[in-house]
Image (cartoon, rainbow, N blue to C red):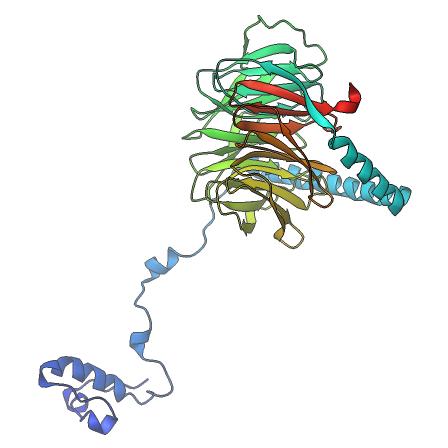
Length: 424
């Protein structure tokens, strides 16, 4: 592009160039404008001044970058990829077999029976464990035990049938924020407000009711710079995800007790992480109100789900692998469909903050600061039952895989058991 830069060319009359006439005091600026106007390609190329003056160094800052992963992380991704592929194949075969062996009428009758059963659920038992709030409750995968974490820093293991105390797992004085069980119930992971994660060996088959034994932690995982909230074991075991108020979630190898991944991406504290049942994806959410879906095989965020008006405190995947429930301080539960990567339904579930949500194939439960537990059908998401058992905020809830028992923990320092009234 040719541009006149000599004074003689730049001094041509603005009137000749159809430009606005400028005052004598603006002579220097006028020369620059006229010089641009006399470009031979004025009407064919944009002015050079329209391009931002950005250096190479500045432009590189906006580009994506990748931090090289360790060899252990690579092997982790490979194991997850192989395991999740086999698990997905098994799940699809199971779904096809279910449809083949059950008629539509039989499926509808079973759903009605289940809804009628949950409509009879009521308070069955209550146990006061400590002088501090019971912040979280989680049922073991074999449905035999319940772990309840307290703000006194300890975790209490109870019999799932009658809430009798089996064992106390002693931590430090920091509040318990998260609990999860290894897939075979032999390891319990707990998180605390000082940023530590505790691992305890446990066996429900050989457990005794000796509560006097000092069951100290077997190992400790450290790395987070702030309070650790929820935890989630990978379905195949070995790997553990942790959500923290340092705005990251991290991935750990339980066997080597090493940190494999520090994942950023959230702008505020991360409160909940949850593995998809087939193990290929993991969801993270927190106080920024955004749900992020990560592919563990690739290490990439594949979806950002936005819609909640408040912080997210609970999440749970359905066994089908493509439906995710998230619970928020805005009082709503949203069901997300991963096939379309968008919101499927929004449920006005509670009048106050929802502290937890758990989702099975035929039922969904939620706990709230409005002192209630709600039970929903996971078929049409209609509320089946509201249970009032706590005298204060309900901090957490969980349900056995069989669906026969529901548990909740509360600000009133109790853990409660709910069952169908038809059973007693």
